[in-house]
Length: 206
Image 1 (cartoon, rainbow, N blue to C red):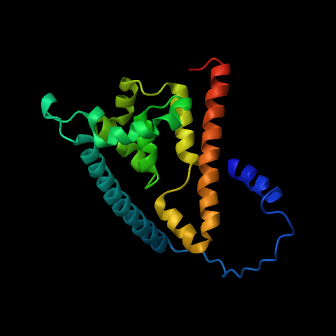
Image 2: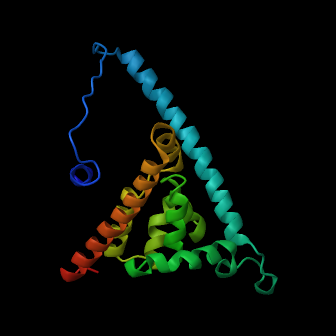
């Protein structure tokens, strides 16, 4: 629904005028065999698991390094508030402060640009838990209320896609339209998240 609304707005503003004719020849549709369908599902599923798993593992290792260093010998080990990742997180925290999100949430969104799957992995690394334990750890940490957590999930779903998609867009479209897509999806994510929280507060949610 949101995509349709945005498409209609763009059609009335940036892309005015009569649409150019477009003809696309499609091959004759054929019902695939069960064997070919299962084989295709297996190949695509295996490719995704290998790609996503390898990428998420790399991101988690990077986050661990950034959160563990510089090593704080006076406190007997790493102190995440003095780490490289905390310094970066505090630098971008003012951007997300109006929505009630802390620097950890901002860091997770940043790594989500590389791959949306990395958002959960980032929280897990920052909290020192596995991905399966992120839900309970976040609830215990008190970083989100139910309302701000819902707004955060909406933001993650709406803001710009992963870097692999951006690379494809750059190849298929002009850089101007790719940058426009990045800018408008970030803006739209902020607007929707803000509306969710604002309306939620008015209705008495927290």
